[in-house]
Image (cartoon, rainbow, N blue to C red; front, side, top):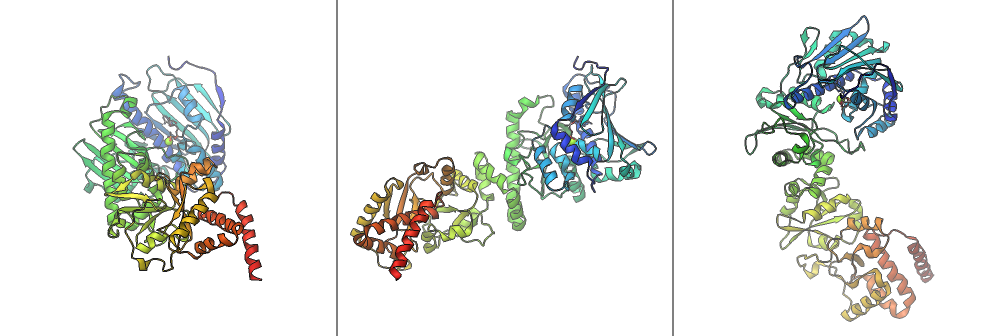
Amino acid sequence: MSDETTTKTETMEFKAEVKQLLDIVINSLYTDREIFLRELISNAADALEKLRYVRITEKEARDSELPLEITIEVNDKDKTISICDTGIGMTREELVENLGTIAHSGSKAFLRHLSETGQRDVNLIGQFGVGFYSAFMVADRVQLFTRSYQTDSQGYRWVSDGVGNYSIDAEDGLSRGTKIVLELKEEAAEFDSPDTIKRIIKRYSGFVPFPIMLGEEKVNDIQAIWTLNKNEITEEDYTGFYKYIANAFDEPMYRLHFSADAPLSINALLFVPASNYEKYGFGKTEPGVNLYSRKVLIQQHAEGLLPEWLRFLKGVVDSEEIPLNISRETMQDSALMAKLRRVITGRFLKYLGEQARNDQEKYIKFWETFGIFLKEGATSDFQHRNDLAPLLRFESSQSESGKYVSLDEYLDRIIENQNNIYFINGPNRQVIEAGPYLEAFRTRGIEVIYTHEPIDDFVLNNLGEYKGKKLVSADQSELDLPGVEKNEQNQEEKLDSLVIANLTTWLQQLLGDKVSEVRESTRLVDSPAVLINLDSYMTGTMQRVMQMVNKDTASLGRKALEINPRHKLIKGLAELRAKDEDFARLAAEQLYDNALISAGLIDDPRDMVDRMYRIMERAIAQEK
Ligand code: ADP
Ligand code: MG
C-alpha cells in the first residue's frame, strides 16, 4: 500500500515561506487576479501530460477509461468555480510536499521581490513554481479533491483558507485526478460568470494540449503547434504558445522553429524571452525547454536536453527517436541526449549568428540581456566554445562608449604585421583610457578590446585565439607589436643607456621583492612608468580576484616595473639620486605606487597618502 487510509482529519501548518507568500497573495489587490485560472489550468495540463506518459511507460493506471481532459464548472449561486482534471493526481505525501512547501530554487528570491516591489509583479508567480497559491487571490477557501493514478490509491480532500494551516482527510468515491473548488471572495464575484471564465481561458490557455470543457462546450483548439508547417501558424499563435509554455506575459525576443531529419528527426520551437530574471537576482533559472516524443511529453523543463548555459530558452523539442519507455535518469546522460543537445545547440547558435547579421540593433539588445549566458558557455562548454566566439560583443578603443564590436569586426581593422588580438580590463572606459597600458597601441593605431566584467577576461583567455590570432592581455610583457617609426614616438631625448642601467639597478634594490624586474620600456609614450605582467596567465582580472583571496602581492604573479627613458620625471629622478638620495627614494616609491594604482591594484593607500604629504612639503618649500 502506498497510501494508508486515514479517517481522521489532520491539520498541518504551511512552511514559513508558503505562509509569507500566502500573506502577500491574500492581502493585496491585484489587477491581474484572473491569472489564477491560467495557473490552475496549467497545473491540470501538467498532471494530464504526466498521466499520458505513465500510460505509455507503466502497465496500469487507475480509471483507465477516463478521457484526458479538463472540466471547468462555474456556479453563480454558490459562488464557486471548480477545475477538474483526470491527470496523475496526488498521494497524501505528494499533497503535503507539493502544496505545503516550496521546492523551487527561485521562489525565495521571488518572494523577496514581491515584498520589495510592493507586490506589483505577482503575475510572475507561475514562473517561480508557486502558481497554485494564486488560487487564494480570488478564493477565501480552497478545497482540493485528489486521487493518485496508482491502482491501490486512496483519495483525499485538502482544505485551506490560506491562513497558516491546511487540513487533509481521506475522501472515498473519488476517481483519478484532481478537482479544485474555489469559494470566491466577495470582491472576486466577477469570476462567477461563464462568459468571463471563457474569455480568460481563451486569453491564456488556448494552447493547452487537452480539451478544456466549460459546460458542454470545448473552449480551446488543441494542436501541437511545433509539428505544424510554419505557414499554418500565425504570429499570434506563436506568441500565445510562448506565453502558455513559458508562463509568460511578455512577447518573446527571438523565436526559432525548425525541423530536421538528419542526423536526428527533430521538431523544435524555441523562444528567447524578453527578460533575464537571473539578472534581477531571482536565482538560477531552471531549464525551460520540454522534451516530447511524438507529441507525448517525456519531460518538462528537461535537464540535459540543452547545455546549462542555454537555460534561459523556453520551448519544445520533439524527437521521435526518444524511446518512450526509457527512464528519465538514464536518458539524461544517454548518447542520444548528447546528440540531441549538440544538434539543437548548433542550430540555435547558427540562428543567433543570422540574427546578429540581419538586425544588429536587436542583437545588441539580446546581448545586453542574455550575453552573460553566452559568456558562461564560452568559459564552460568546450564543445561550443568556437561557435560562441563570433557571437561575443565587447567595447573597444574603436567603439563609442556603450557600443560594441565583434571579434570579426576587430579582425577587419587589424593593421599590418599585427599578430594578436589585444584586450585590457578595467572597470570602465575612462579608467582604461587614462592608464598607461594603451599608449603603445595608440601610437601604432592598434585597436584594443575593453573588458569590464571579470568574466570577460576568463572568456578571452579560455578562447586563447580567434581565427589564427592569439588573444593577448595588453598588460602582458611579450606584446609582439609591429615596429613604429621613431618620429611617431615621444620626441624627447632618451636617457643615456649607462644612466638607465644605473637607475634600474637602484630601483630594483629599492623595491626589492615587490617586483621581479625593473627595466627600460619600449611601449610607454606619455607615462613615466608601468607595471607589466610577466606571467601570461595573469590578467588584470585574475590579479584582482587573487588579491581578494590573498593579500600577499607575491600571489599576483611576477611583475616588471618598466620606466620610460624619455620622460621628464624619470630623467629628473636620475639626477635627484646624486643630489638627495632620501628624496629620490620617496619619489621612486611613489612612482611604483602610481603604477600599482594604474594596474588597479592598490588596496591600502595609507602609506601612500603619508608619503604624498612629504613630497608636497618638499615641493611647497621649493616654491618659497
Ligand atoms: P509548479 O506547477 O510550477 O510546480 P505550482 O505551485 O503550480 O508549481 O504547483 C505545485 C505542485 O503541486 C506541482 O508541481 C504539482 O506537483 C502539484 N499539483 C498542483 N496542481 C496539481 C494537479 N491538478 N494535479 C496534480 N498535481 C498538482
Ligand atoms: Mg504550476
